[in-house]
Image (cartoon, rainbow over the protein chains, first blue to last red):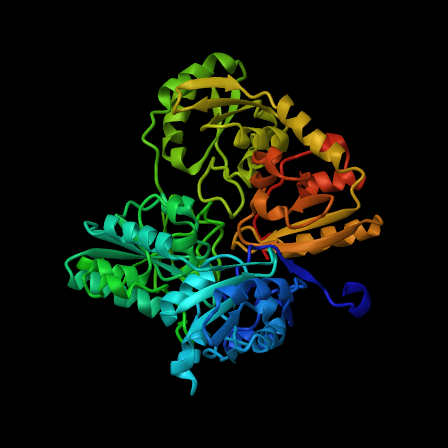
Length: 297
Length: 297
């Protein structure tokens, strides 16, 4: 770029976890920012100077979807994926329709760029299948992608069966989230006696939920508990050691508490799990935390 | 504070390495920021809302200074320390004068809050002893504090003998920096064949030397080498793995390259060491990198 355009290039070398994590500091110094690998979140002033250069996986979804078919006796299937496979959803649809299925492909809220796309913090596309004219018909979901995090979010959010087709392994399996529920229940259980809560707020552009943090602090106080608001950029287990609270409540990236569960010195709760601890939510209503359209503040 | 004043309190939970590392993001949201443990750097607009709450060590300097006396046959002694012992420099002076010494206590540039104070990135107080009316008389330095980093900076910057008195261990020793020179020479040697350099720029308020980075990039190109500017907040060995350069040049905190020398995947040079690599500086003129008054940009 320097050779062809004469423009000065500065490279962002901070870690980056999503479109929620723009290099805001660099952005303030440059005319144009190219952000690689993530699709745009909802448009704000911040994003006006940012070009999102998405990347696509070359992995063929065919074998994984074929492997998924025997696990899907249901007729009406909602299909969901992450941005790197989103260009192959037409292929997925065709394979399912060839097998006699009806396919429901629906788009989530304004944080979501494509029909059928889910984020680690946003499963609104799954719920939007439920709310579509075909609503009552959707009997199961097929998730294209790797890992269990997204499918767990879909299953808890839509309360339906989820089959996962992994294009990298060309394998499929039906999601079983009992281990997840047990793990989160243990974290909630460990927090029932906690008196002092550290409420984590991220400064990252798409993870910053200050109003939620203030509401949670107030809730804690209404229940006779104490809470302090801890603001930070990157959230790592190490830096949590500095704070002698009984438990943390995480309003930053919803994946933090769940993915790194065992690595924190004390329990790290999601806002919904904190409500369970306070007795304001039933254990049965445990869901994954989500950051929805318009929620960043 | 919340109980007594009704003010809302937000706690900064990001790691913090000095007054060079204010929580700028938090600062933009609050009316007043209390920053603990560091003395103020030079005044800028940024610092107007910041109260620096310095902290003082309770360790008694007496035994360490007494242990240092036999190592100091010289008559005129410059005394230097870090901010947590700066309140005990009068005691140090008295002990030395009682032992028949002449004491030189001098203040560095405007990044330095106290006479005799040095920072890990600023040894101007040592040079200022050399430039005082007593200049030629200062024969050796007594450094009060722990570790070898500050005394190495003093020795290389002032080209004089340094005796270290550690108040925590109540011990003293004469600084020997041969190991340091060998280590840094190895890093320089390992970079002689490098063609592509990653020039690290920190966004931290007191570590940001963009103009220096641009000058170094230009220098590299004048010598037929390639260089890219990498901008980041925290500098960690892990994130350096993302960049396949032959060597890094660090314009952020000068301690980074030196303290964590073995932990980086490729050599990390200081700007002065980079000049040696390019043939613009003699090996004999190796000094510790410093960030001086007015140098942040």
